[in-house]
Amino acid sequence: MANIKIDANIIYVQIDGSWKNIGILRNRVLNVHRTRSKHLMRNFNAYGFNKDVIESDKHFDYVALQETNMDEKNIYFIPREDILLEGRLYKAEGYDNQYFMSLSQLEQYKAED
Image (cartoon, rainbow, N blue to C red):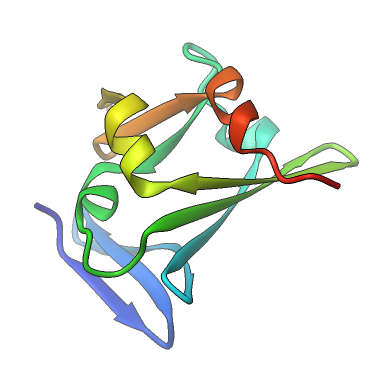
C-alpha cells in the first residue's frame, strides 16, 4: 500500500518517492479535477482513480469528479464503493495501480445542470 497523507484537506499519495496531489477532501467527499484531453485513458475511454486511495475508507465516501472537456464542464458524484465494485483494476507502465471507470459507466453519476 502506498503512503497517503492529508495536509490542509489535500490528499497526497507517495509514488516513486515523490508526493502526488490527488484531490481535496471536503465533508467526506474527495474532489478531483480531470481534463479529458490529458487524463482520459484512451484504451478504456475511462478515468483512473488511485487504487490505494480508493481502498482507504478512512477519509471519504464519495468522489466528486470535475471534468473539463474543451468548453464543457461536467461533475460526476460517485460512491467510493461503486468504484471498488464496478471499476476495472489496471496498472499501466509508469503509472500507479488504478481503478478505471469508463465514460459510459460514469454517465449514471453525472450531476444535473
